[in-house]
Image 1: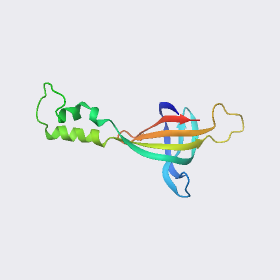
Image 2 (image 1 turned 30 degrees about the vertical axis):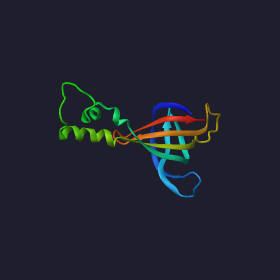
Image 3 (image 1 turned 45 degrees about the vertical axis):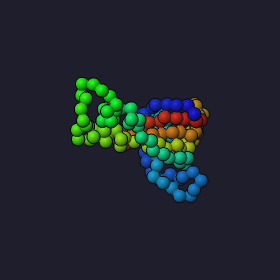
Image 4 (image 1 turned 90 degrees about the horizontal axis):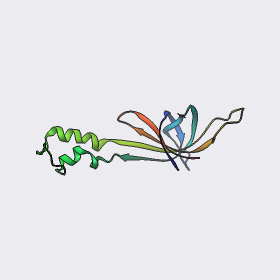
Length: 131
C-alpha cells in the first residue's frame, strides 16, 4: 500500500459493510486530486490515539522532564494533558471506484483507500492507497 498525506473532501452516508448486507454511516464518496471516488464498501474501520506519551506535557506531568518548570503538576497541566489523551483519529479502509466515463480515463479507476478523520480539527486525509 502506498502512503499519502493528502487532504480530501468527504461526504458521509450509508455504505455497505464488507461481507454483510447491513449498511453503516461511513465515507460515501471523496474528492481526491479533483476526482470523485464513490465508496462501494467499507473493508475495515478503526480508531488510533496520537502518541500522547511523547508530548512534552505528558513527560512533565509524570516528572520525566527536568527543567525550569520543575514542580508538582497543577490542575491546568492535567487539563492540557487530557487533550493529548483524547486526541483520536478515525480510520476507514474503503473499496472505491470512479464513475464510468464515456471517454477513457487516466489512471486507476478503482482501488482500496485508507481515509482518516481528525475529530479535533474536522479534517479528512487520504493516508494510503492500493490500486
